[in-house]
Image 1 (cartoon, helix red, strand yellow):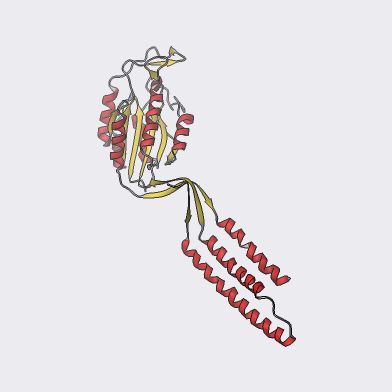
Image 2: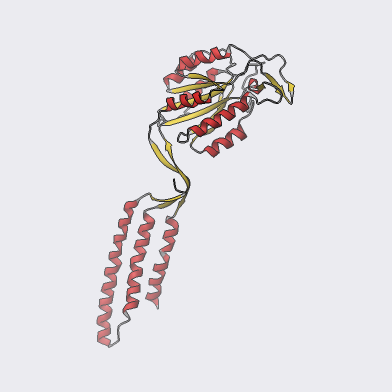
Length: 322
């Protein structure tokens, strides 16, 4: 799309320019009377050029105001088409087990999740995407937007281990998949979003989750897509040292995610299969849908055009007084 484009919010307001007929009629009548008086007094008439300038100024005032009434807006930057019938929340598990990595210098599960989420965001340019985190509760960080810059900034600045910490204390497992039901019950998605997707990045090492939460998601049309971020030999490190010596990855985590996803009408994909993740997201959201235009920045021109009307108006007043 062009870097700048001009749109009119109320184009029919240009008909206001027809109001220029009124001052022209009044001016013509004044000119007629002026000629009669001058004929009686024997005073020569003013030059036709001066009269033409005044008439032109009288026409310009309503014409300029009509242009302002059309509400011209200059759209600056990239103008994108944004889906209004579909929204996504990227949900990060921020429990301590997401600190696990293959070694002291290896990327943690959460860091890998953030990298994959960024790739997914780029693959869905027309879809408003929001960000949330969860442990034993879900916390929104960014409401769905098509602004990729806002997404990247929120991921880098707001998402972190136990930010905030879970409401309750657990030795190792603070994650509760049941908390995800909040996505369906707390107005995370507006009514206009008929296609609702929650992409959940987690290691699946959760407290036993009842399937009531999964049923709630399914009933409210929120489809979960779990990304299993996990490694069998990973440990929790902090400052290069083992921080949780008793921690061991739970091999039953994938089974728990699959049961929950099946009950909720969702899917589970492995962190290493980004292509499958993108394909599953596109399948859930659909390729077609209602779109609206949205510009990165908009500049309203109506106030400046209205000020421009002062130029011909001032000319008319000066001619009248002098």
